[in-house]
Length: 155
Image (cartoon, rainbow, N blue to C red; front, side):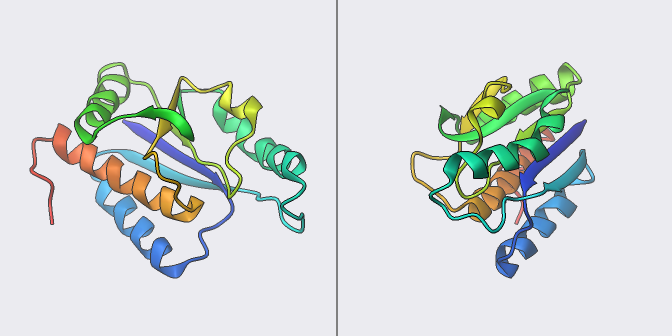
């Protein structure tokens, strides 16, 4: 099974970065996982929302062409951990789709990227920083794969 996680910019918070790397290593025995960091919009003020989203979309769009595209969105569908595991099992394992998770920067994802989604997924009704959302997503992928493999969630 192939899983790609694509987001603009690097994780700057060393604590989140450490957790992300840890989860990537835990996922690797069960899936071919890649983390792709695309260019982020730098040097623009937050008031230039459209320009920021467009610049980041240019880096993300080539990864939104193949596979089963899952865009993180605060307005997306909420799944519990079992439902998320079922989705990964059906799409990633049974149907052999590459799972492509697109995570936006601090302003989210461009509408034209969101249009490419097969699924718009919300991690919670609460709002997380984009770096924390990345970490939570990796933890949930690891939890889902653990459930699929028949393990109670490991330590």
